[in-house]
Structures are given as C-alpha cells and as structure tokens.
Image (cartoon, rainbow, N blue to C red; front, side, top):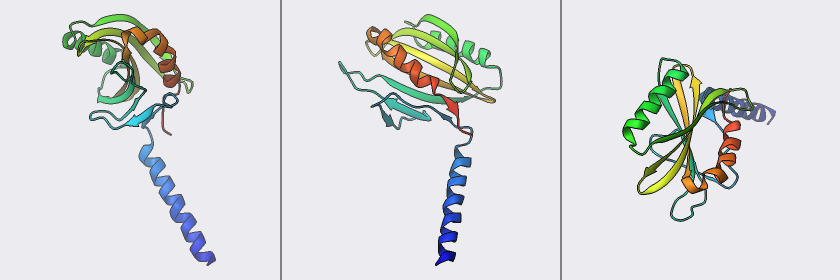
Length: 161
C-alpha cells in the first residue's frame, strides 16, 4: 500500500511539473470579477463581460512573432490600425508597468466598427521574439467607466514561470 501511495504522489508531481513546464513563458492575467473565459479563434485567451445594448466588453490576448523591439512593434501596429480602420483615432500612448514588473505600452484608441463607436485599449508586452497584445474593447460611451477595470486586470499581467 505504501508503495502505491508513493507512486501516486510521484505521478501527480510529475503531471503537475509537466503542466507547469508547458505553461512556462505563457501570458496570463486575472480577468475582471464575473467575466467569463471564452475560446475565440486567433487569440491565446479571451474573457467577456456582461452584455448591454447588444455589446459585451471583452479582453483578449494575441501573440505575434516579431524580431524587433517592442517600440517598433507598437509603431507597426499603429500603422496597421490606421490602414485597416479608417475611423481610427489615437487618444493616448503611454508606458505601462504591471505589478510583477512587466513593462509595456498602453495605447488607447476610439474607432467605429460594425456601426458601433468603440474604445479599444491595447496593452503591448515583449516576450522576446514574440510580442503580446492584450486588447480591451468596450463601447466608447463606457470608456471612462471601463478604463479602471481594464487597468486593474492588466496590472496582473505576467508571464508564467
């Protein structure tokens, strides 16, 4: 019996260690309370808040390969947004640091997509040859109300160790 218990402990420990290794370096954050995790194509992770007026605020994490600096990635992303979204308006661009010390760039924008005025805040983080963009989207009229919610969630952003 003792042999079986020891074996089970080692198997469980091995599984936990393998899972931790699998997630090592992966981006993570604590979503706003009550938001639901969703599976969205093209994203690493996504969460959705409560819908109002037919729109649900959301947060998603996307990964991209880029060999240059984070600043160059941000600038290239801004140029792409300007080309893809004619109504793109940049409100602010500033540095952002999480509670774990991850340094990034926060870009706040407004645009019109699908007949809706949206405020989107993009948080960019450097993962070496991979760059991560966390996009927080809400209706423009809710932008000031949602901004602290998004910042609070993004303060928890980190790379799994």
